[in-house]
Image (cartoon, rainbow, N blue to C red; front, side, top):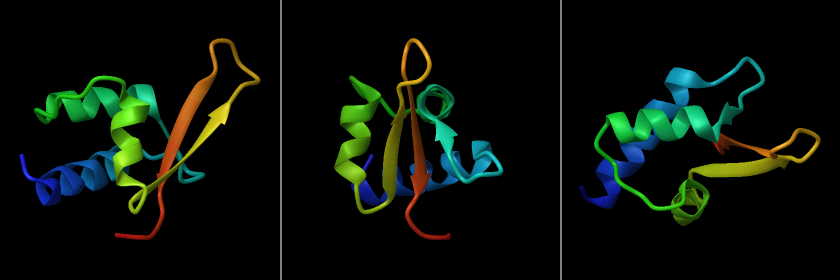
Length: 75
């Protein structure tokens, strides 16, 4: 897949599983990306290539820590 196609899949996947506060758990996002045929190693490393689309945060108050992402702008 080309970058533009991957970006479109990321945007659609986030919009399909986003919570009311605008954040999506990376575990759920990763499942959707794999279902769409996107292959990656470590998801957070893969998504860091798309900093223009997503911002991420870590909730270290839970064990193991949970990572969340949200779209930077509305699509």
